[in-house]
Every structure is written in C-alpha cells, then in structure tokens.
Image (cartoon, rainbow, N blue to C red):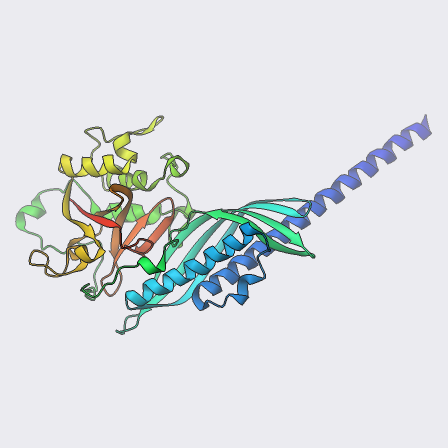
Amino acid sequence: MIRKTLFIMLSLCCIWITAVAEAASSVDKDEEVTGYIQQLFKDRTNFLIHQEEQAIRHHYAASRSSRHALRHEVERSAYIHAWAERRGLQFINAHSDVRVIRAKVRGNKATASVVESLRLDYIYTHTAVRPQSFGIGTRHAMTLIKEDGKWKLLREWYLDPLEENPKLIPESDDMMLRPQPKQSSNHSEQPSTQSDTKRKPRYNRQKAVEYANKYAGAAWGAGNKHRYNPKYRDYTGLGGDCTNFASQCIGDAEEGGGLKMRGGWHYFLFNGGSRTWVQTDAFKNFLLHSGYGQLIAKGKFPDVVKPSERHPAGAIAKLQPGDLIGYEMKGDVDHFSVVVGFDDFGYPLVNSHTADRYRVPFDLGWDRYTSYWLIHIRD
C-alpha cells in the first residue's frame, strides 16, 4: 500500500514538473516572438524615414506573401516622402510604440495580434517652423515563420492610412498657408459680436475637438489609454468606424459637441447607431439638410486650396476646429474626419477612426481623384 501511494505521488510529481516545464517553454517562446516583433517594428520605423531597404529585408521570407508584405513597406515609405516633397515638408524622425496583444507559437510558426502607435515628425523646408508631429494607429494580424533558427514575417494584414500611390499625389502650388497666431486652436477665426456672447451656442466645438483628441484610438497622441469610448459600439469590422466617431464628436452630450440627436440621427444604447449616425453618405446628407452643417466647398485638392474670388486664401482656410471633412471616392463619400486644428504653418489637421489618425494633415493618404467636402458645423 505504501509503495503504491509513493508511486502515485511520484507520478503526479513528474506530471506536474513536466507541465511546469512545458508552460515555461511556451512562455519563453511567446517572449521570444514578442521580442522579435518589437525589433521588426523598430527596424521598419527607421526604414520609414531613412529608406534603407537592406535594414528590413532580412525580416522577410522568400514566399509570395512575405514579398508582398515587404513591397508594401517600401511603397508606404516612398509615398510619405513623395507627399512631403510636394507639400514642402521633410520627415525627420519617427517613433513606434508596439503592443503585442496576443502571440501563439505552434511548431515553426507563430501568429500575433499587434497594435502600433506611430509618431511622425516633420519640418517645413522653406521656413523656420519648429518640428511638427502627428500620430497614426494601426492594428496588425501577423504570421511568422522560423527559418534556420530565425523568425521572419510570413504574412501580414493591416489597414494602412499611408497606403497610397506616390504617383497620384496632387500638387499644391496654389495652396496658401499662413503661420498660426499664438492662441488656442479651438477658437473661431471670426470675431465675437455682442449678440453672439448673449446666445449660448448649440455646438461646443472646443469640446468636440477635445473629444476627438481623447478618443482617437490607437494613434500616437490620443488619450484614454488608446481606447475608443466604450459607451459606443465599434464599427471597424462592420464597414468602418469613421462616421460613428464623427457623430460622437459633434453629438456626445457629456464630452462632445452636444448637438441634439434628431431627424433620424440617433445613437441607441443597446442597438447602436442609426443609419444616418454611422453611414457616410447618409450622415453627409443629414448635416447639410438639417441645418447643422453648411457646405463651404466641394472639390478635388486643387479646387479647395487655390485662392478664388469667394475664398481669397482658398476654401480650406475657412475650416475651423470642430468642422468636418468628407472624402468622396468614385461618387460616394467614403470617409469622414474631424478638423482638430492647424500646424504652426497653418496646415489643417484631422482626427479619425478605423485607420486611427491624430492631428494628421488632412490630405495625407488620399490621391488626386479624391473630392473633399468641407463642412462647417454651425454654432
């Protein structure tokens, strides 16, 4: 009986030791993958600025999917530098904060879900303006493979706000930018009148901007620990969250602009947003027909930035923080962003969801075929 008891105890002890060893091995493998991913993003961030392809090529395997992932990184770097050149800018630095949400190793392969918060710094090449910064946030689904004892990227998917053809960037020769006065970017450019001060505005554009900055998601610079407002459903996987976010910014009664929900534009606690709340064209039509919004101008990039008799500094100069921009592609409004201010040289900056943006130049990531709907939200 004693021998039997000792045998059982010894067997259980061996099982426990084996389980602990396997768990420790699994943790070690996960940490190894996490460390590799951190280095991968660090190298890609440096490449984004310096464009030395050999610095990242060793991270990619010989497979077609891996070559495609490498080509994507090369093209996104080419795009941002081409865009900067056409806007009289130069990117000088980038910093990446990477969070590995989960990583799983199986044999010689690993899968991982990763969130990157990227900061990009730029200067103007023709004037002495301090370095400017903006942030973007991306969510990555990655598959890695171990070859000759080294991890490599086998395939990757992410919605990239910098995925655009550098050959389709419109010129900005007619764009008139002006250095911004040293005051809060949330103030209207229009002087207040006595009647204005007596009337309480229905739209609090300062709070709308604060909301847009707080809940800009994974983008560098955003608040709320890089999380969306949990009070609202996330529509990223249901066609996109950009219009839902724009609606929140102008309509949230507690933290946002405070416009009253009406005319089919509603968010319901348990059912989510109405079609007008979350769908781009329906939202645009509601804004313009309800009286909440006023169309400043609509047109392609040269049309909205060039001076005209009606807009001597270009229609884009009429935008105020808290206004909205709709992005039309092939006849349909495809995206909405919230104007949150201007950089020190007067370039309009926007926040948005899905591919999260924080104080990003309004046209970065769009091409010459994009039409811009500049919509002023009435106070």
